[in-house]
Length: 117
Image (cartoon, rainbow, N blue to C red; front, top):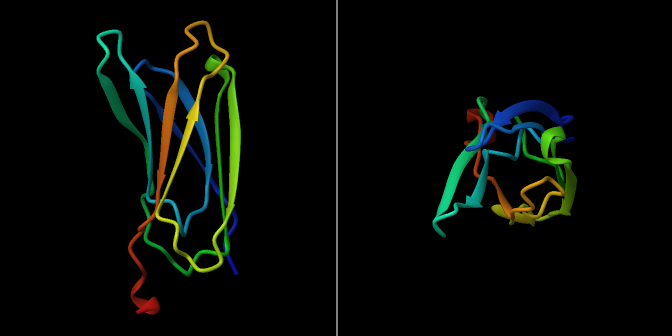
């Protein structure tokens, strides 16, 4: 049985704060990418899971990301009964003053615990 989601916080390139709800046995890290005024992109890791995987993740992957400052609040749930998903990308355009596109990358591949081998 999968464990309950955990809560974390992160800050992006521009100093915006994010609240993150993540699945502790699936999420390895969450990154945010935004386009700069120069046309180039900037990517920053919002969150990196500090723990090892304690048990196999459940068949559903759930993640929630919110930023009150940017009026951003979304959650995703993906059914993955075979455990084959390794990355989820969500592109948003928060209703903040800047109206810029943000790309969130949610990555798997958390190291297995020694008991799983």
